[in-house]
Image (cartoon, rainbow, N blue to C red; front, side, top):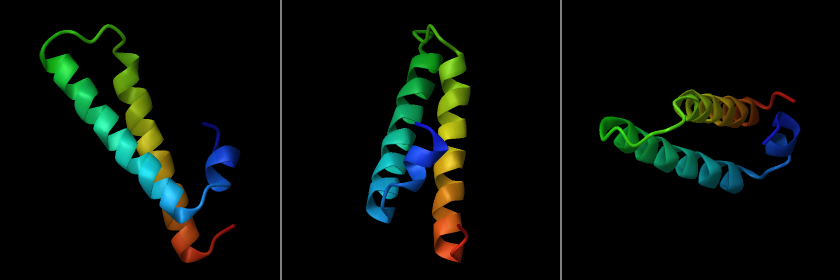
Length: 65
């Protein structure tokens, strides 16, 4: 998702997206530990997605934008 699309979401939807991203990160860590992960870039992409979601949630809390 692009930042503009994420900004259009409500706070509940952002929280749901964040929860899903954490679940995805957990799955990726498990696959990495069992050496079943094919695309290692996925790990970095999901971590960035989590950071992006947290940043936008914080912006929302502070009333920025």
